[in-house]
Image (cartoon, rainbow, N blue to C red; front, side, top):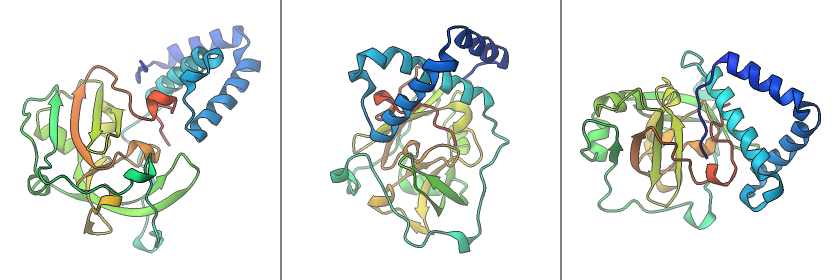
Length: 253
């Protein structure tokens, strides 16, 4: 999909007026959002429903743009004391047989796209960068949420270290288990977005996304990709595994 995360408030007002004139906000939009929500919750591939596909993709793209316009790196999600951490934190993945995957022996984090230094990163090299910890809420699109503790490298520090073009629009993540996702640059530079190396003060194990995962508490949980293999800085929207099937691309919380 070709979502554009940047839109002005004036553009939002004009688009809402246009939708209102067409009656979508009064009738069709309500029905479309209901169908869209059903698709998101069930993981339904919206491309199989040709009758509603165009309208839903239009609404999803517009929703992405509105969320992008309202996003601010100064708005932080709530942090919690250690006493609030969920004791039996659950893990999840998009396909049960891939929930626990061993780390490849030759694992290195690759970088690509609009960056000055494309040298792959070892885990030891990542641990040599400044680290930060956070206790934040993980909110799953399935309807559950839990509080956990993660620590790792702030993504904005990593991007600056590799000479990333911070004017680029997207940062894409691919995983060695076949998963993928992408985020806008503003979300990548958010101070609470980290490349997590530890969970509950221990190095990540496979079910938590070893050896490194994205942890982005300002978005729904499926955006926090596990088992990272590569990071790409790009001006082309790369989509993602679930996003290409109809999940909301921006997915802010």
